[in-house]
Length: 340
Image 1 (tube, helix red, strand yellow):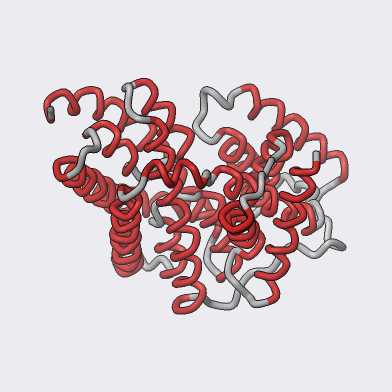
Image 2 (image 1 turned 120 degrees about the vertical axis):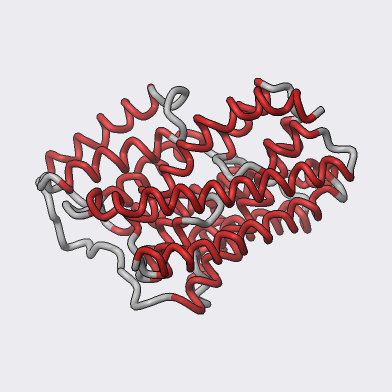
């Protein structure tokens, strides 16, 4: 119990400190940083509540869904082909670099390619286990990429490209009747039951269902902003707890290779985002966050904080996530034996 108190206490203090100095994505990056330093410097033990994590995913999915409007789905349509093409370029570059790393190190091709794929961590772990890769290394490599994205992309976007940011919903404003809170319970039940079927179900299903209701004129009761801040803190604890110092030591020198790979892919994402903005007229903040290699929730929240369009970011990120989850396992099963 004491480790829970320390974990969430450090997370709250770190998030508050980051918010005071206006660090982007403060209530997620603060907890991640605080817990990592706590484990690295004080050798402290951290814990997390998986029930709280699941509820936090749901609430953040709802928060993103509440940004959808009747125009969102029609707005995303014209972006589909150029976005998918640029996403495929990012995936190809990522896998090509990962194959090169495997050829020049002792990492096997399967582990390297799965560890570099710009998809969701949980989905790639499942793929790793099914293809008999080194799941510990896959987890570490994806964690390195995710942390690199979280610390680099929001900073670049907020410092160089942001426009006047959208704010959290005022606690006094209620856009829907109280009875619609029942939808939150139903959504949690549906998403939890389908969590092993739909990738990132606890985020994607609430986001799409609430977004669809909003787009069709159904007003949803909006919880106070404090709930969404608390959800970000819980996700920060989840990420900070997941970073294992011992696993990082096991990965050793390989961490440097995959950090460099992550930086290259982030750069490709930024350049691709600028190209997408130029070709389609989408604003640069939204385009770059939509093409950031990972972190659907985090990039959508960053869009909300920096004046982008979180509904467009989350919709496009979902398209890439589904593409990776559906196509890459088939590609790996077909192509990896031919690479050996």
